Length: 330
Ligand code: 2XP
Ligand code: FE2
Image 1 (cartoon, protein in one colour):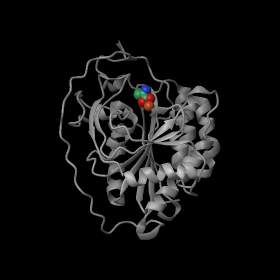
Image 2 (cartoon, helix red, strand yellow):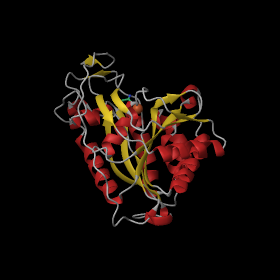
Image 3 (cartoon, protein in one colour):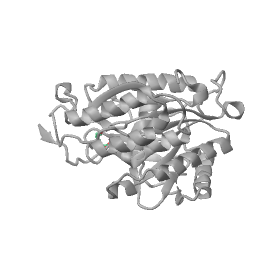
Image 4 (cartoon, helix red, strand yellow):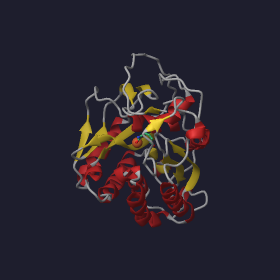
């Protein structure tokens, strides 16, 4: 076993990534004009191991696989998102940390290399994607109109964090959809209690911006559940004989939350999410999941749990929610 906290140099590499246009015919209707609105939301955890295990050309390290069940869940998400034919993916991620206010990436074409600081030997990913600038700017405007401190990030040199890149790759490895990326105003990491109230407002502002621009949007909450992880890893990081929950308490708390997600309409999660955070130091403390459900307006539907698995001990679930009018079984 070796320590996971280490830094390695990352030689530059410049792969070109292909993009193709998505043609929007025969789309599932949504509530808004011409099928616009939020058509689905996913809890989309980003641990770098999942991308490392897949060996996409954009990521420098090579693996022999691993974490297959979670990756199969993402295969299903990819199929569903293709079928939904959204105009845009909107992602809220916990590792673009801002101390003051809610920031929205308004750079038209972010490009660069994203590195996971704890696991640089697993994730050095070359990204190159398009931002839906009109929607991003509209979101900043709606944040301000709703009384949130907010900022348009227009500096092309800012490196996009691995939680944003991870969720976007896992949901859409072709990168053929525009993106709106929202940072985490991470006051919650500095206080004892989670402060999720602002995420209600951020969710409402997101819904309003999507409606105002007539977009058909899929939302991604880039969060792990129970978040304690081992500080050692195997010489072969993808050795699945070494992959198991950090402890039984963390696992049971994740199962309690997932049972609520599977069996109860989302308003039950207003209480269940903070309880789960208190029990596990869940990464949902950064607010992504609350933002997602608030943007969906806390629909009277259950979540569709597509997969669960541990990653270096943390608990990760891939879950879909649909708005009420598009519910599969809500
Ligand atoms: O993304 C994080 O928060 C990590 N520490 C990466 C590792 C496993 C997360 O679940
Ligand atoms: Fe994370």
